[in-house]
Length: 215
Length: 215
DNA sequence: CGGCGGGCTTTGTGATCACATGAGGGGATG
DNA sequence: CATCCCCTCATGTGATCACAAAGCCCGCCG
Figure 1 (cartoon, protein in one colour):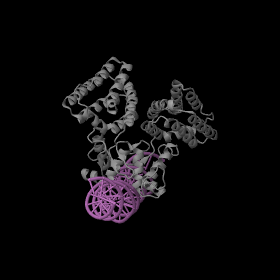
Figure 2 (tube, protein in one colour; figure 1 turned 60 degrees about the vertical axis):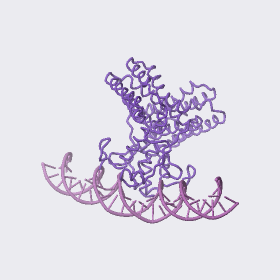
Figure 3 (cartoon, protein in one colour; figure 1 turned 90 degrees about the vertical axis):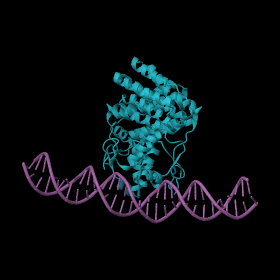
Figure 4 (cartoon, each protein chain N blue to C red; figure 1 turned 120 degrees about the vertical axis):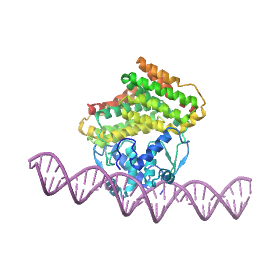
């Protein structure tokens, strides 16, 4: 019953529940304000309330869930100020992560980024919101992993988590079909070793979508 | 039994335990690597294992506690790389927070900061490590509250939390008695409305102590 | 027809218990 | 004297239960 590797079927129940919910939230598979119940979660994952509670509290600590004063659990509904603040945090953290990844980015990484980016474009053309969010985050995470800054990456992921449900609401109604231009700029800056260009491209990519949501 | 205001004696048990442990850790009242047990915590706060577990998991989610693969709980022992990264995060976040607070900083705030800073100097002269950490953080938090950026402030506090036990180890062996020079620079920059100066002063203040710890 | 009150139901909280596992100690052996 | 092994005890995990409070819905009254 011990926790072995990261995603192991034999992991503790609370961890399984936590990971499942986390992925669901980060990928925007739940709508903002959706209510959850401990017993409901327990039923879905075939566990008792105890691990469900632990998973929920952990997610609440990361800002992925909102606990009312009476303990009721729901997905947060973000205000515009909050969204702008989280966008600023994304910019701050991810520009730094990209900058740190730049000197370590060799060709193999850039190739992988281009492949992921092709999938992103595919998701956009298929209007698959969840798929888009997932592959878009994969693009960013792949780059930032090279920064060798786990604490910083963890913070960035926490911000993604908080924005998850809102992102879904955004990309759900934003019906655009053009491929991600900023991702190309990021890749180009990586190839050229152009740090100012990279910082600008990342900042734009991170900020643009959320800007029009908050507007 | 509902959670009312922030620090209420009638707050849920898990919240009381959480807050008590959090304060203890952030203020450096525990040494890095110290072991905790759920039953021990429960005994100390006169609750059962259940609220103790929730408090611990919440703190672990924020990086304030380390859970071994077998679930054992202890204060984290940070590597030098980790410390440097957290210092970089402090710089990133707190420079931004200070910058946002600057246009909103009126005289009353600066007065309060000077008062707090006097207490900081007192703690330094008394060689009271815990008191120093507590009032130093109060100085920073008072300034950053003016930034009106709760998510960003929460992230900064999370970093403080992760550094808590290590900070204690630092200031415990760093036997300096000079008052905080950087705090004066911060106050001066606030008075002058000098944003570049403020950014530099905050960055120095945040970075300097941790630099020599990691060295 | 709308607002309000009361009772029912759902929900979170915390305690307790059975269980499996990992850590630590003591003894035997080389 | 060091090392390894085994046994015991302590610890985390998860299930279940009793309880209190909050939400909700229905009916009643204005």
